[in-house]
Length: 392
Ligand SMILES: Cc1cc2nc3c(=O)[nH]c(=O)nc-3n(C[C@H](O)[C@H](O)[C@H](O)COP(=O)(O)OP(=O)(O)OC[C@H]3O[C@@H](n4cnc5c(N)ncnc54)[C@H](O)[C@@H]3O)c2cc1C
Image (cartoon, rainbow, N blue to C red; front, side, top):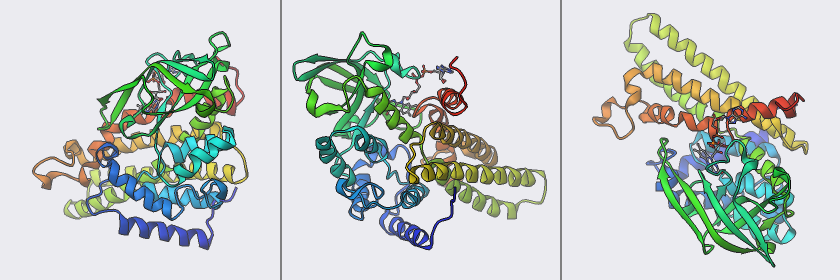
């Protein structure tokens, strides 16, 4: 396992940094809520990235990639997150790789090129009101009727359906099979007749959807990815890719640098004493954790570069990254004290510290353990797949 980057890799990193410095508007904040409010702007920047071939650079050339080494993709993801830009959406990050592995040639041609050019976007419809951690107990049905599936049921927690062209979902296609073996993986257009949704706001400042499928009729040949009733295995590919994130390390590093700057300024004003030493130690601890998180994410890249598919390793980085961010939010909150309650809109502005990012981080904290599968479930995966322990 070797994590050193080549001189060419580092030169590429410089190009990505230059891109974000020159392309992101001075007003760009990079908040979670902007995924809704600045959708068109984000899409424009993603298309510029796509024109450079960066969004899917490690994909094969025939599917819109550049066949670049995984290390470049990792650097791109790291710098995008550091600049608080979400370049890795569901299509690029996890549906595309799953279609590459499980889809028919026709589906690869239909979806992968447009994903690599940032032309289409996807809503993820896995969770249901009574099927989250125990996803395989889902009840949304896809019933065969000739060459069609007829979908009925309800999903919850996916986001941004109002701006997504497609929805990918899991539905029960064989009610008599054991629960993991009767599920199919479908990609359907968002404007399919019978598909309706509602939006609700979450604590983190974003919106999420409840989606209803009422006799949605879709052609099997176009919408079924992989084989009928084998959708669970495709969902596993999707989720493993969703969990392999370097973003926590990169966004953590950026905020740590900003807090250290802030503290350097404040430290000059304060006489020497206890609080300063405590803050130094906490920030040093955060710096160590961020490096550990980066190494765990690099390890995933290394596994991919030797042709392996990460499994429990993805759960490791998901747990460590999300819980590290929660610990960091706590430290940052203690550092800023009551100022940590002020969001970026608070008035008067002069009291707002670190652009209100600590307030946002504390508010977003709970979601990190849940999104992509609850951390308790990730621990179960590590225990069974990683350590070979029996199922409870
Ligand atoms: C911000 C956000 C975005 C999301 N986006 C999407 C999306 O785009 N698409 C989508 O399909 N879903 C999405 N989700 C849903 C997410 O995948 C689920 O929240 C997650 O899988 C947990 O399911 P649940 O919320 O139903 O909790 P439950 O499954 O009800 O779990 C509740 C609690 O019980 C614990 N628990 C449950 N079972 C076990 C067990 N066996 N052992 C130990 N502890 C257990 C869990 O860890 C959790 O703490 C999103 C969630 C959030 C918060």
